[in-house]
Length: 331
Image 1 (tube, rainbow, N blue to C red):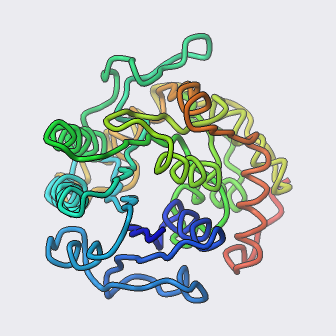
Image 2: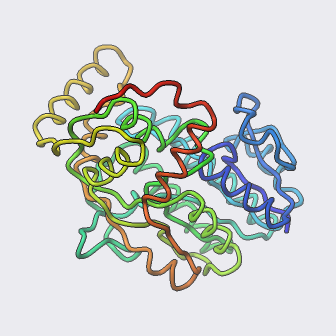
Protein backbone atom coordinates (compact mmCIF):
# COMPACT_ATOMS: atom_id res chain seq x y z
CA UNK A 1 0.00 0.00 0.00
CA UNK A 2 1.12 3.54 -0.77
CA UNK A 3 0.46 5.82 2.20
CA UNK A 4 0.89 9.57 2.69
CA UNK A 5 1.72 10.67 6.23
CA UNK A 6 1.63 14.28 7.41
CA UNK A 7 3.39 15.30 10.62
CA UNK A 8 5.96 12.56 10.03
CA UNK A 9 8.64 14.19 12.19
CA UNK A 10 6.41 14.34 15.29
CA UNK A 11 6.11 11.72 18.02
CA UNK A 12 3.06 9.96 16.62
CA UNK A 13 3.76 10.56 12.95
CA UNK A 14 7.28 9.18 13.21
CA UNK A 15 6.04 6.03 14.93
CA UNK A 16 3.41 5.64 12.20
CA UNK A 17 6.02 5.99 9.45
CA UNK A 18 8.32 3.44 11.09
CA UNK A 19 5.53 0.87 11.41
CA UNK A 20 4.46 1.40 7.79
CA UNK A 21 8.03 0.94 6.58
CA UNK A 22 8.46 -2.14 8.76
CA UNK A 23 5.42 -3.83 7.24
CA UNK A 24 6.58 -3.04 3.71
CA UNK A 25 4.37 -0.14 2.66
CA UNK A 26 5.53 2.63 0.34
CA UNK A 27 5.52 5.81 2.39
CA UNK A 28 5.32 9.41 1.22
CA UNK A 29 5.79 12.17 3.79
CA UNK A 30 4.83 15.82 3.47
CA UNK A 31 7.50 17.83 5.29
CA UNK A 32 8.25 21.51 5.58
CA UNK A 33 11.60 22.76 4.32
CA UNK A 34 12.42 23.82 7.89
CA UNK A 35 11.55 20.45 9.46
CA UNK A 36 14.09 18.59 11.59
CA UNK A 37 15.82 16.10 9.28
CA UNK A 38 16.79 13.59 12.00
CA UNK A 39 13.45 11.75 12.41
CA UNK A 40 13.45 10.57 8.78
CA UNK A 41 17.21 10.38 8.17
CA UNK A 42 17.58 6.61 7.77
CA UNK A 43 14.06 5.80 6.58
CA UNK A 44 13.27 4.78 2.96
CA UNK A 45 10.47 7.28 2.39
CA UNK A 46 9.55 9.62 -0.45
CA UNK A 47 9.75 13.21 0.75
CA UNK A 48 7.56 15.97 -0.65
CA UNK A 49 8.46 19.44 0.57
CA UNK A 50 5.36 21.40 1.41
CA UNK A 51 2.87 22.26 4.11
CA UNK A 52 -0.67 21.21 4.96
CA UNK A 53 -1.68 24.87 4.70
CA UNK A 54 -0.64 24.84 1.03
CA UNK A 55 -3.34 22.95 -0.86
CA UNK A 56 -1.23 22.43 -3.98
CA UNK A 57 1.63 20.77 -2.09
CA UNK A 58 -0.88 18.51 -0.34
CA UNK A 59 -2.36 17.46 -3.68
CA UNK A 60 1.12 16.85 -5.05
CA UNK A 61 2.01 14.62 -2.11
CA UNK A 62 -1.28 12.70 -2.41
CA UNK A 63 -1.05 12.21 -6.17
CA UNK A 64 -0.32 8.48 -6.11
CA UNK A 65 -1.35 7.09 -2.73
CA UNK A 66 -3.89 4.57 -1.48
CA UNK A 67 -4.47 6.11 1.96
CA UNK A 68 -3.65 9.26 3.92
CA UNK A 69 -2.81 9.54 7.62
CA UNK A 70 -3.04 13.12 8.84
CA UNK A 71 -1.14 13.58 12.12
CA UNK A 72 0.16 17.14 11.60
CA UNK A 73 -1.19 19.70 14.06
CA UNK A 74 -0.42 22.94 15.85
CA UNK A 75 -0.54 22.21 19.58
CA UNK A 76 -0.87 25.18 21.90
CA UNK A 77 -2.70 25.07 25.23
CA UNK A 78 -3.43 28.75 25.68
CA UNK A 79 -5.58 31.69 24.64
CA UNK A 80 -3.34 33.02 21.86
CA UNK A 81 -2.11 31.62 18.49
CA UNK A 82 -5.66 31.34 17.14
CA UNK A 83 -4.65 32.36 13.63
CA UNK A 84 -1.96 29.68 13.42
CA UNK A 85 -4.21 27.12 15.07
CA UNK A 86 -7.04 27.66 12.60
CA UNK A 87 -4.70 27.80 9.62
CA UNK A 88 -2.96 24.52 10.47
CA UNK A 89 -5.57 22.53 12.38
CA UNK A 90 -8.69 23.57 10.50
CA UNK A 91 -7.74 24.77 7.02
CA UNK A 92 -4.83 22.33 6.82
CA UNK A 93 -7.15 19.46 7.68
CA UNK A 94 -9.63 20.62 5.05
CA UNK A 95 -6.83 20.61 2.47
CA UNK A 96 -5.83 17.06 3.39
CA UNK A 97 -9.46 15.88 3.44
CA UNK A 98 -10.12 17.41 0.02
CA UNK A 99 -7.05 15.66 -1.38
CA UNK A 100 -8.28 12.33 0.01
CA UNK A 101 -11.75 12.87 -1.44
CA UNK A 102 -10.38 13.78 -4.86
CA UNK A 103 -8.18 10.69 -4.84
CA UNK A 104 -11.02 8.51 -3.56
CA UNK A 105 -8.85 7.12 -0.75
CA UNK A 106 -9.35 6.61 2.97
CA UNK A 107 -8.25 9.34 5.37
CA UNK A 108 -7.37 8.65 8.99
CA UNK A 109 -7.61 12.01 10.72
CA UNK A 110 -5.78 12.24 14.04
CA UNK A 111 -7.60 14.42 16.54
CA UNK A 112 -7.35 14.28 20.35
CA UNK A 113 -9.39 13.04 23.29
CA UNK A 114 -9.59 16.68 24.33
CA UNK A 115 -12.37 17.24 21.79
CA UNK A 116 -14.57 15.19 24.14
CA UNK A 117 -15.67 16.09 27.64
CA UNK A 118 -14.07 14.65 30.76
CA UNK A 119 -14.83 11.45 32.61
CA UNK A 120 -14.14 9.88 35.99
CA UNK A 121 -12.32 6.75 37.09
CA UNK A 122 -15.64 4.96 37.54
CA UNK A 123 -17.26 6.45 34.42
CA UNK A 124 -14.62 7.36 31.84
CA UNK A 125 -15.80 9.37 28.85
CA UNK A 126 -16.20 7.68 25.48
CA UNK A 127 -17.11 8.58 21.90
CA UNK A 128 -20.74 9.18 22.86
CA UNK A 129 -19.99 11.56 25.75
CA UNK A 130 -21.00 15.24 25.55
CA UNK A 131 -18.30 17.51 24.20
CA UNK A 132 -18.16 19.81 27.18
CA UNK A 133 -16.10 20.47 30.27
CA UNK A 134 -12.89 21.62 28.58
CA UNK A 135 -11.69 25.24 28.36
CA UNK A 136 -12.37 26.63 24.90
CA UNK A 137 -8.69 27.36 24.29
CA UNK A 138 -6.95 27.43 20.91
CA UNK A 139 -6.06 23.74 20.68
CA UNK A 140 -9.36 22.28 21.90
CA UNK A 141 -11.49 24.65 19.83
CA UNK A 142 -9.57 24.24 16.56
CA UNK A 143 -9.40 20.45 16.83
CA UNK A 144 -13.15 20.32 17.42
CA UNK A 145 -13.69 22.56 14.42
CA UNK A 146 -11.41 20.36 12.32
CA UNK A 147 -13.38 17.26 13.32
CA UNK A 148 -16.58 18.98 12.28
CA UNK A 149 -15.03 19.85 8.91
CA UNK A 150 -13.99 16.24 8.33
CA UNK A 151 -17.41 14.92 9.36
CA UNK A 152 -19.08 17.38 6.99
CA UNK A 153 -16.96 16.05 4.13
CA UNK A 154 -17.80 12.47 5.16
CA UNK A 155 -21.44 13.42 4.64
CA UNK A 156 -20.42 14.58 1.17
CA UNK A 157 -18.69 11.31 0.29
CA UNK A 158 -15.26 11.36 1.97
CA UNK A 159 -14.07 8.00 3.34
CA UNK A 160 -12.59 9.06 6.67
CA UNK A 161 -12.05 7.72 10.17
CA UNK A 162 -11.21 9.94 13.15
CA UNK A 163 -8.94 8.70 15.93
CA UNK A 164 -8.61 10.48 19.28
CA UNK A 165 -5.36 9.66 21.12
CA UNK A 166 -4.84 10.20 24.83
CA UNK A 167 -1.64 11.43 26.50
CA UNK A 168 1.12 9.74 24.52
CA UNK A 169 4.55 8.67 25.70
CA UNK A 170 7.07 6.54 23.87
CA UNK A 171 10.19 6.48 21.71
CA UNK A 172 10.96 8.73 18.72
CA UNK A 173 9.90 11.93 20.49
CA UNK A 174 12.42 14.11 18.70
CA UNK A 175 10.96 17.55 19.45
CA UNK A 176 10.25 16.52 22.29
CA UNK A 177 6.48 16.89 22.72
CA UNK A 178 4.62 15.14 25.55
CA UNK A 179 7.93 13.58 26.60
CA UNK A 180 8.88 16.97 28.02
CA UNK A 181 6.85 16.01 31.09
CA UNK A 182 9.09 13.00 31.65
CA UNK A 183 12.25 15.06 31.16
CA UNK A 184 10.93 17.71 33.55
CA UNK A 185 10.26 15.12 36.24
CA UNK A 186 13.68 13.54 35.69
CA UNK A 187 15.69 16.75 35.76
CA UNK A 188 13.79 18.88 38.27
CA UNK A 189 12.12 16.32 40.57
CA UNK A 190 9.18 18.62 41.39
CA UNK A 191 7.67 18.39 44.87
CA UNK A 192 4.08 18.87 43.72
CA UNK A 193 1.92 17.72 40.83
CA UNK A 194 -1.24 19.06 39.17
CA UNK A 195 -4.44 17.82 40.79
CA UNK A 196 -5.96 16.24 37.68
CA UNK A 197 -5.16 13.15 35.68
CA UNK A 198 -4.89 11.74 32.16
CA UNK A 199 -5.26 8.62 30.06
CA UNK A 200 -1.72 7.46 29.32
CA UNK A 201 -1.05 5.60 26.08
CA UNK A 202 1.98 4.51 24.09
CA UNK A 203 2.81 6.19 20.79
CA UNK A 204 3.59 2.77 19.31
CA UNK A 205 0.17 1.41 20.27
CA UNK A 206 -1.59 4.50 18.90
CA UNK A 207 0.35 4.10 15.65
CA UNK A 208 -0.77 0.47 15.44
CA UNK A 209 -4.35 1.57 16.08
CA UNK A 210 -4.12 4.05 13.21
CA UNK A 211 -2.84 1.38 10.82
CA UNK A 212 -5.72 -0.84 11.88
CA UNK A 213 -8.16 2.03 11.30
CA UNK A 214 -7.11 2.15 7.64
CA UNK A 215 -8.35 -1.40 7.18
CA UNK A 216 -11.02 -1.88 9.84
CA UNK A 217 -12.37 1.50 10.91
CA UNK A 218 -15.93 2.46 10.02
CA UNK A 219 -16.20 5.61 7.92
CA UNK A 220 -17.34 8.64 9.89
CA UNK A 221 -16.65 6.97 13.22
CA UNK A 222 -14.49 8.24 16.09
CA UNK A 223 -12.12 5.89 17.91
CA UNK A 224 -10.54 6.84 21.22
CA UNK A 225 -6.99 5.47 21.41
CA UNK A 226 -6.12 6.04 25.05
CA UNK A 227 -4.88 3.87 27.92
CA UNK A 228 -4.74 3.64 31.68
CA UNK A 229 -6.50 6.45 33.51
CA UNK A 230 -4.16 7.77 36.18
CA UNK A 231 -3.74 10.87 38.34
CA UNK A 232 -0.77 13.08 37.59
CA UNK A 233 0.53 12.37 41.10
CA UNK A 234 0.69 8.62 40.39
CA UNK A 235 2.05 9.23 36.88
CA UNK A 236 4.84 11.51 38.09
CA UNK A 237 5.63 9.08 40.92
CA UNK A 238 6.00 6.32 38.35
CA UNK A 239 8.19 8.56 36.18
CA UNK A 240 10.35 9.30 39.23
CA UNK A 241 10.71 5.59 39.95
CA UNK A 242 11.72 4.75 36.37
CA UNK A 243 14.25 7.60 36.17
CA UNK A 244 15.61 7.18 39.69
CA UNK A 245 14.46 10.58 40.94
CA UNK A 246 12.83 11.72 44.16
CA UNK A 247 9.04 11.26 43.89
CA UNK A 248 6.58 14.15 44.28
CA UNK A 249 5.22 14.82 47.75
CA UNK A 250 1.73 16.23 47.22
CA UNK A 251 -0.87 17.43 44.73
CA UNK A 252 -1.14 21.18 44.35
CA UNK A 253 -4.17 22.95 45.75
CA UNK A 254 -6.22 24.84 43.23
CA UNK A 255 -5.13 28.27 44.44
CA UNK A 256 -1.40 27.91 43.68
CA UNK A 257 -1.67 27.08 39.96
CA UNK A 258 -4.55 29.56 39.66
CA UNK A 259 -2.26 32.36 40.82
CA UNK A 260 0.44 31.23 38.39
CA UNK A 261 -2.01 31.00 35.51
CA UNK A 262 -3.46 34.42 36.25
CA UNK A 263 0.05 35.89 36.37
CA UNK A 264 0.77 34.24 33.03
CA UNK A 265 -2.33 35.78 31.48
CA UNK A 266 -1.33 39.20 32.82
CA UNK A 267 2.15 38.80 31.31
CA UNK A 268 0.56 37.95 27.97
CA UNK A 269 -1.39 41.19 28.01
CA UNK A 270 1.65 43.24 29.01
CA UNK A 271 4.28 41.66 26.75
CA UNK A 272 2.21 40.16 23.93
CA UNK A 273 3.93 36.80 24.53
CA UNK A 274 2.04 33.98 26.22
CA UNK A 275 4.06 31.88 28.70
CA UNK A 276 3.65 28.13 28.99
CA UNK A 277 1.97 28.58 32.36
CA UNK A 278 -1.32 30.28 31.61
CA UNK A 279 -4.88 29.87 32.85
CA UNK A 280 -5.86 27.52 30.00
CA UNK A 281 -3.07 25.09 30.90
CA UNK A 282 -3.93 25.38 34.59
CA UNK A 283 -7.58 24.55 33.92
CA UNK A 284 -6.61 21.58 31.75
CA UNK A 285 -4.20 20.25 34.41
CA UNK A 286 -6.95 20.23 37.04
CA UNK A 287 -9.30 18.07 34.94
CA UNK A 288 -9.54 14.28 34.94
CA UNK A 289 -8.93 13.42 31.28
CA UNK A 290 -10.22 9.86 31.71
CA UNK A 291 -11.44 7.90 28.69
CA UNK A 292 -12.52 4.46 27.57
CA UNK A 293 -10.88 2.87 24.52
CA UNK A 294 -13.37 -0.02 24.43
CA UNK A 295 -14.70 0.80 20.96
CA UNK A 296 -11.18 0.72 19.49
CA UNK A 297 -10.37 -2.46 21.41
CA UNK A 298 -13.49 -4.17 20.05
CA UNK A 299 -13.42 -2.88 16.47
CA UNK A 300 -9.75 -2.18 15.73
CA UNK A 301 -8.01 -4.70 17.96
CA UNK A 302 -6.36 -1.84 19.85
CA UNK A 303 -4.23 -3.07 22.74
CA UNK A 304 -2.76 -0.41 25.05
CA UNK A 305 0.19 -1.40 27.22
CA UNK A 306 0.77 -0.33 30.87
CA UNK A 307 2.20 3.18 31.47
CA UNK A 308 5.42 1.82 33.00
CA UNK A 309 6.40 0.24 29.67
CA UNK A 310 5.80 3.49 27.79
CA UNK A 311 7.69 5.58 30.35
CA UNK A 312 10.62 3.15 30.34
CA UNK A 313 10.80 3.07 26.53
CA UNK A 314 10.63 6.87 26.31
CA UNK A 315 13.29 7.31 29.01
CA UNK A 316 15.66 4.83 27.37
CA UNK A 317 15.17 6.55 24.00
CA UNK A 318 15.91 9.99 25.48
CA UNK A 319 19.06 8.63 27.11
CA UNK A 320 20.25 6.94 23.92
CA UNK A 321 19.71 10.07 21.83
CA UNK A 322 21.44 12.60 24.05
CA UNK A 323 18.48 14.34 25.65
CA UNK A 324 19.67 13.57 29.17
CA UNK A 325 23.06 15.25 29.52
CA UNK A 326 22.94 15.57 33.28
CA UNK A 327 20.33 14.66 35.82
CA UNK A 328 21.14 16.15 39.20
CA UNK A 329 20.73 13.88 42.19
CA UNK A 330 17.50 15.19 43.65
CA UNK A 331 17.12 12.41 46.17
